[in-house]
Image (cartoon, rainbow over all chains, first blue to last red; front, side, top):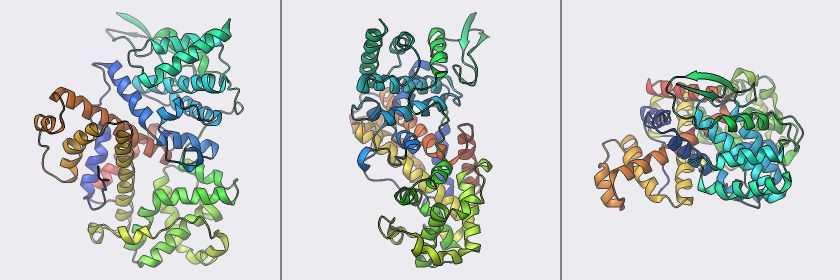
Length: 170
Length: 296
């Protein structure tokens, strides 16, 4: 697959490419909102610039440890090598984004990212990145796991975190 | 009639608790009431990590402003970061202003060093004023007025780790550059660089996730008709060519990539604006400028 470049295209064509952002086919997903949330979550998990953006808070502009190739959000959330600082930044990032999201599907996605970062902190680093009780976390993780749109990439992580919560809440 | 708990604009207790709304015939919400309640509590937490200041700014403004507190290595990193993303519009703007290739390269390098290392330009700008694109063009014009500062570049800039602008000679100016005013050139290159990064992000993500067929469908059915003109060969033909079982499946695969494209656009523009709310406005403004053929 060759790299695409837009240099040389007319200005109007650049505008048409940008217009894909507003493609009505992506819409608000009123017909099947679960499917929309699922697709959106997968798209977020595949994105690398989210990690880079979160990394700006901790001084890691590239978003990858040791200056390696950028990792996708999904990789960072499920990779045991991800540092506690990175997970904390992602959690903060999701929290900030949650305050700004307009659509219900996007709210669901950033909420999931928030809890996935907390889950990774619990499972990988044995640290709770929130003052929320284990009982409440258990309940939230359980509800997220029931969602039909939950990504298979995150299910294992959320289930493991839920086990940690159950063990520590007793 | 359903009574559903729907999050307020601030969501889950960040700016207030979820408020109940009476919705007639609403489908089941994606996040249900109990989860919203627990999320409300979770989002109200004071994190135990990194203190309780959870305001996390991600704009390129903050990257530049924070660089001032860092050491030389950090400032160099920020410089390279900005150059990597924004040299094209700045360089092409300068070329359309009439500077030679070499002069434009030097000025591009100097301009970003001025922003990050000297910070004279950034001190005169107010991040609350808005978009990074607007700031950069305004700062560039201010810089050109006082470009005598470039003479001190070598004293300020570390010799190692410098971003190479050699690639500029390979890329040069786009064919239509001669028909554009400098400011049009700047906006054109801004959008072009933005889109190149987005397309690379989506393509690499598809490769990484073993979704080459997804990408190929999106490329042939959506991108090529825009970039090369003409129309798509049609989904039925594409299915046969790429071994996709049926058109409905192909359509779903294309939507999956479109969704990734949409997220990539959002993530690329977000650091250039003040808030999430402004992302769509910035994209629409770019589209408007480009569409009217006056890209400046």
